[in-house]
Length: 137
Image (cartoon, rainbow, N blue to C red; front, side, top):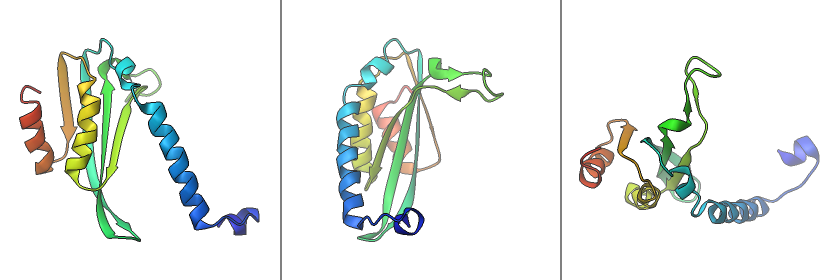
């Protein structure tokens, strides 16, 4: 598509290398950043969802995404009737939900809040984990 639209020839391997390089840069940048986001947060919301994606290498695989944001980051009605969330921390994982939870728990460990609210669909794995890991939430 790049060749057709821009006249630039880029191999699939080069695109893969760039994705890995910039992904690693983003991971390094993100390390430790959540501690400043959660400083003094009142209520923190955790949203989780998952899906299946078809990969070329291994067929269908699970993908999970978690989003954490403080109530203070929700600008109610300023730009739209629904408001917007100005600061979030995302955790994503392509693979089994247990590996996702391991990553997400490291973000949750940085939170100092009085109230943690989870928003998710009816996935049994998530609610089993939530009731075990955060029974008061």
